[in-house]
Image (cartoon, rainbow, N blue to C red):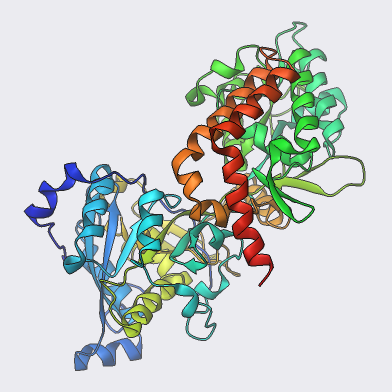
Length: 540
């Protein structure tokens, strides 16, 4: 197994390096056309790759990757998986696996050690200050000069123009993002409760409020007790952000009259907060929601206390799975309890529905100038990353080799032969860290057989991509010095004030006072800086 060991000199320097936030995320899902290499056919690979291998001309790239489980590409059979990937892409890969727990420290050291710089660095979250500064200092290639060539990079050239803004520094695209669903946010509700109470699927904010009210006071479970609530909330405030998008407030920032402003300065934001305060005052959510832990959040719906769940659609679907698996009886008296999933909600009757866009990414892959010294090096890296987005390689990274690690059933679905093996013991584990999964969805996907519930979830996510509201300032916030210095503090001020207002701890005057504190602590400077960059872009 190809593994570069970090030099002891580098390791000794870890303590002196500023930490960079980041985490590895397990990729999910496969998509595209065709099948992954089989255990019988992997030796041949593609004709081009085989020819290159015979002449010794196949290029080699180096990738520093996150090792989540401590066994990345180091299990029995991993060599065969790696060879299949190299044969398919026509590129040899020298992986340097770094444990997730120490990745931040090692990355900081690596950025200072240009003599041993890998060509590609994986990063597991949004760009943080140190990486942004490294980009400003010219550490990474501007991929805008390469990646939009559709013939060379048919997959990567489909990157979403809104998502790439989060990986663009001073106009330079420094990272290939690892794609995640843009339209992941949505509402789930107990369909059997709604049926019992004669409620239709909510389309507008008013409909949602009516359902919440009826779920709280209409005895939806039929036990004759006042023991249910409308919406399940905890101290994680993501659902409040989604509600604000329903009202047209935007996603953190909004373009108004040719200027970018934080959404707390919009009337739609205040309308949303007043609505949420009424929701709280009317008792439609737990009184102590702001102190409830996130790790027990879904329990409120699972145990029949709450009827609605607002977050990523995956969680609502998992609640639905639980109801079915545990055979929870329907409130109608017939069959099993069920959920209904919804994407966007409109502010008013006849209006366009909205939901909150995710970042669309889970980290990125950066190509370094110190490692990839020539344009040909960059193209070799991009060739590998692009081909790893093909369906064959997505299957390889997620399930291994056909005939050994998985097989296809009569309907063409993947049957995981290693389903009982611990994930850290699987031969392909870790390879997905080098898969961008761009585009997120490919036609005619080869996948595992999915439940009707999962099919419904994925269909809504795909439809949501067209109505999901992005943050128009994300690209400028990435490059902002003010945001790097005080952005976290500014967010905390707004989040805390919003919660206090909803729960009645401060009134509207107190809320406005906190908005002034936000301005004084750097908010005014942030608006000025963001708009200076925005105006420079729009005037081009």
